Image 1 (cartoon, rainbow, N blue to C red):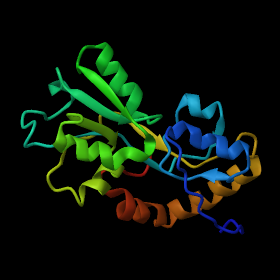
Image 2 (image 1 turned 90 degrees about the vertical axis):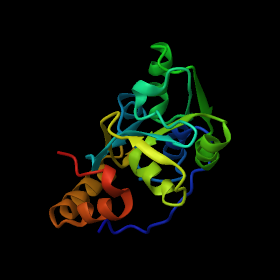
Image 3 (image 1 turned 45 degrees about the horizontal axis):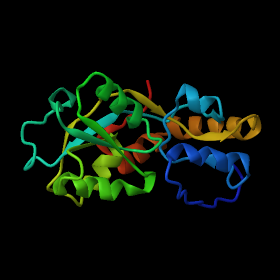
Image 4 (image 1 turned 30 degrees about the vertical axis):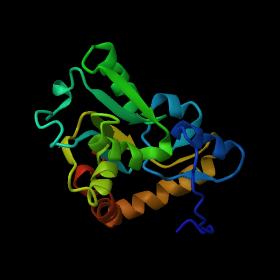
Length: 199
């Protein structure tokens, strides 16, 4: 649709926000990895129109913490988040409000370790965008997503600051795919029940 060759570049940094430097050094032309559009990120990259709406979720091992059903139940507990993820400021706010005992920050590539730690006492709860946690919980039946919609976040593809031609091309292609139902089908297939088209 864009008339460009497609090549996947895997991001391996410990802090998700580091992914944007790859745009500046021409390692890749766009970021299409479930990236939340935030004011801070819009200062360093240009975002295309949002393609999905989702929010943070809370995951727990109910055998360890059967009384945790939402962020209102976290007093005295350790919440895990990924470095540079949009869950991190939410967790820091909970800490400032004394709603949690501590925030444990995992490297961006340590999501599986964080989820394992829920059962081995490394942390008590974990917060992450719901489509991601829903995906990982398919193979972790001992864990449960007890709350979703903690935040309201728009996801979008980002491009190098000032790359208007690519941004417009992606927006045009995305609009076509939204109109014919392709984006909706992709959200259902890959992002699960906790993501939807933006309104």
